[in-house]
Length: 439
Image (cartoon, rainbow, N blue to C red; front, side):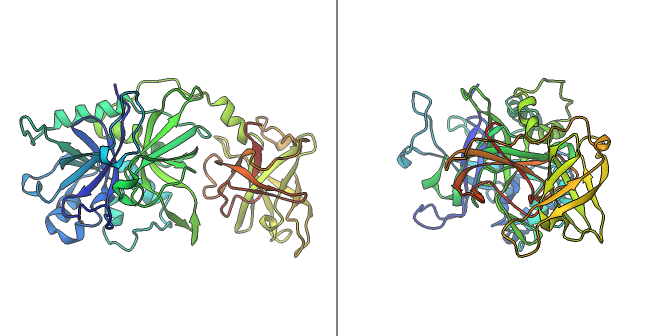
């Protein structure tokens, strides 16, 4: 069975000339006849068609809905796919790209994504937030059918649609593990010239209702919405589809976010197919990646939060950034172990760098008996760090109620007093643990 690959979809009303500015979206090619794409593919046309708007608005969350026959022409898309060469590789020759004509035959509104964006991401901003239908389209999946040229069949029924979705589910990774290598395949800017472009990073976190949203530091551009997200196992012999890009750009607390957000396909497909997933062991071991954050804690002081690292378990000593605890001693400092219990203990400020100094360090101490037994102290490297060396950071840039977020990168510059890296860093990452791959 072929691994699902990316496709480009342009609405039939958009100019075909790739030298222009086509505003297409990526999609997931499930098979010869089936393409799955994200609801944002309709963002350019939904406000121009009352019929399409009514159709999307009428979808009941969690119910697979057949598109009305009268919308067939309005929901037609040109589908572009990059064929594989005989040896299984992909071609960089634009002239080899195949074009087909398909139409949206079904859609559904995922309740998991609805609850997650209404909860976890309620205060976030996304690039299409000025479009009044953006909130409506964010949890929408669209299924495109490409009719066989031999028989011209264009009508499909629910059982056939569910069979196509089950095929995708069978190939989807059930439990993406933080720190696993990830790859996005998409068409940046929706231009056919860039079809099949890839970006690589790691699975940074899995959040939301039933873990329905994946964060990755693999970089995606506008037009990548709907593109597949893969996990690459340690043997690197194949890739496993895991998600679908839903937001390549976003802002949190008026700060641009470097992470790409994707729908986790497995729970979303299980929900619409009304299936219970059998207990399957993870394909990738958790042990190696969970070791990355075993010395990392959440530090809170007043309205601020950041990341702390355990440096000495016997004395209960932690390091964080001075600005994270700027409100101390007027405000108490708490250390939160983000395990299943989210246990909390109070910390004493031993030292922090004075203001306007080149360093930004604070030393905290807690009662050693209050430290989570699973935490391990940070092991400081005695080997000089080299420019270009791969590293990861582990911290809490956005969420204080889930496990730490992981970002990968390289050492851009190594100085006596500081390290410059390409790891994603947002507010809340302050004090995060940098680690060599893998320390």
